[in-house]
Length: 330
View 1 (cartoon, rainbow, N blue to C red):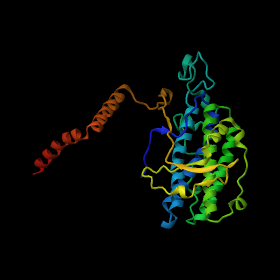
View 2: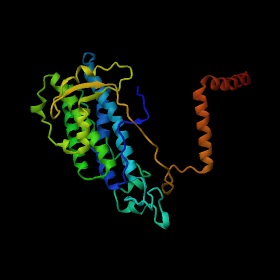
View 3: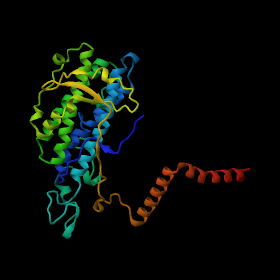
View 4: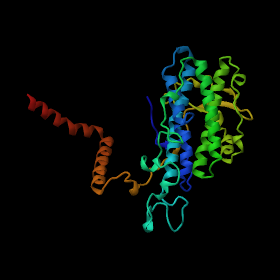
């Protein structure tokens, strides 16, 4: 089973909205080498894993796959922030981004000329499960042969290609919101390259000769260098709430794919960063709650909170109704 913590795995750095950058990031989300594929590929490989004696490899796949869920959350939230705030994307101190249509302007005019119109027309200024040209994400991207060596080789290729594409996206925009997320994902891709390269080494595979990892010199990007200096590329998170993961038996020792070397280590999970729910967008009718509906939503929320605080009292309130119905049937 899975648990969810209401934090993002990395901070969303504030900057002006940039729908064009948001659309480029769609490739990193729903493209053939994007985060949706890595999430589904590694999780399915772990779900279908065979051989109890090879449990550390299953745990490694499961841990990386679970982390990829948080990457989908991070990049999706980033895309939503980059599309949010029509129609003045460049911003102005006298014309706040959060006042669409101020002064009689057409609220979403820029949707016709910037980025992906579906971000506005279909997604309510949010991310979509598509690539940068609008192709829907496909389950056919997922590779799961059942053979551990083949799966690990494919995973290493997947992480290397994903990192290459993110380096290209980084070079396309100077938006701080986009670059902070891209830089984090570049470094975590390198950590996952380390994970799969190390796993192949333990199986006696000369992965460096079979599949040499391309050099992207991403450390020249300031945001990436900062994270590399923190050693983020040398950590692997298990996301194991019961601490039963054996991934540390593989992800240890010297780093095989890290520039400058380093020692690998595992941690349960990062602390994360608070996430704020995006503001309402009346021009998108999102969330589209009128005052009466909002009042009902608030009443239901308060009732649920009260029941959560005192579940015994909530159960007692429901019990008499059940008994009375039973008597009526008799």
